[in-house]
Amino acid sequence: MKHTARTLRDLQVSPLGLGCMGMSAFYGTADEAEGIRTIQRARELGVTFLDTAQIYGPLTNESLVGRAVRSQRDAYVIATKFNLRMDDAVPGDPSTVGRQDGSPEHVRSSIEGSLTRLGTDYVDLYYQHRIDPQVPVEETVGALAELVAAGKVRHIGLSEAGAETIRRAHAEHPITAVQSEYSLWSRDPEAEVLPTCRELGIGFVPYSPLGRGFLAGRFSSPEELDEGDFRRTGPRFTGDNLQANLRLAQKVKEIASEKGVTPAQLAIAWVLAQGEDLVPIPGTKRRTYLEQNVGALDVELSADDLARIDAEVPEAAGERYDQRGMSTVNK
Image 1 (cartoon, one colour):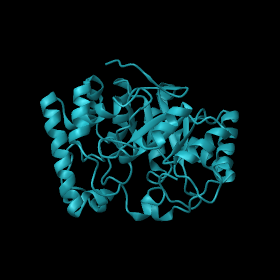
Image 2 (cartoon, helix red, strand yellow):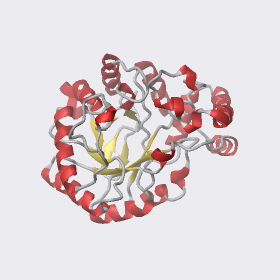
Image 3 (cartoon, helix red, strand yellow):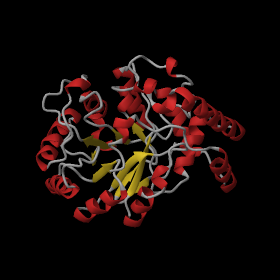
Image 4 (cartoon, helix red, strand yellow):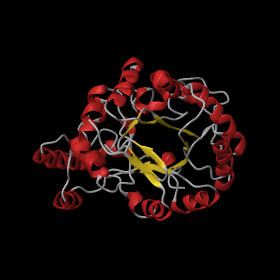
């Protein structure tokens, strides 16, 4: 199955990426062997843009990705992210992770750990995972630019950055991509972030294009999720918000059925239709879901389809994260 590549500013990637977080963290029970097989199957399907981060595990997801790509490193475009201090972090134990730190010293030490865990001498795209309000973004990006000059990083990205921060960062060194949650039910980047990226020629990488699996119909109640799954207490998956969002997901399912596709394929196809400068990275830890997601590349949505979706599918009820999580985004 061959599909046209997309470009994030000056970085060519597959038109669909693979979010690897759930293979190690946050979404309940993980099966590392299946995760590795999923990454390798992705390459066979033409999905070669992988997304990981230091915090996933912590530290274990980068190692998993490194094992999966070891014999085919150059066949993949690998993106990873830094933010929190990992000086005393114990792999797999989130309670041992330290504070947020965007200092140049932390930028330099973080990349060394990522390169070791990934088993590579360069990262294709290196994101600041969250903006540190205590460190001017110009200082952080200046240190990232040094890594580019040294050949350890090929492209720089920002995750969950606000429009003004993006402008300041881009003035220091060209930013290749901005990553944020964006989907049928999370459209807030359309107000400022996405227009800013387009004005500056920066690519946009939507994560959670399936609403953390909810829009795909993967679950309808938090009780269906594993005990360790952070979605069990997410604002969108509890109380009155859950009931409103179940109706939203049912509408996605209805439209998808009429199109003869799965809800997941409709949701991803909608994101893909928002522009050639967008590359969604739906996450999964199973080959079966990966194969279904790739089918979205063959879904064609007409102007009438898109108009109907916009009219009939509202944004989600509830915030994306709890209060603490929301305090770190769009900064």
